[in-house]
Image (tube, rainbow, N blue to C red):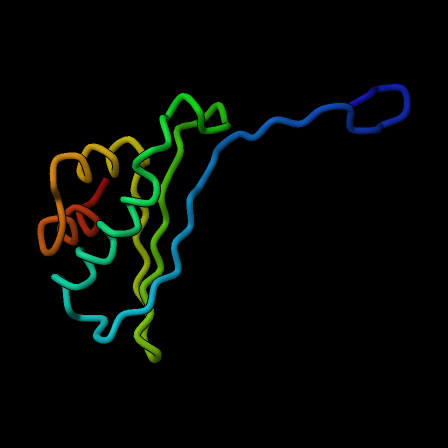
Length: 101
């Protein structure tokens, strides 16, 4: 911010959050939620952490919706990518998403 006139001269991101809003048939189906989350992570798997803007670590936010209920999960990008590259899906990935960070 320019102190003389208050104008914004530059801006840089503090943190990048990847948001996924995903439909599921049954909000209680842990296997399906984990498998759908793994498919979403596949879309991010080619993005290197070094190429993600922000001075703070990136995050991934999932919103699952079955038409009447929603579940929200947040996980750090590095942890999500480690899980994806380790083959996590189904219940194993669901359990990771629901574990306290």
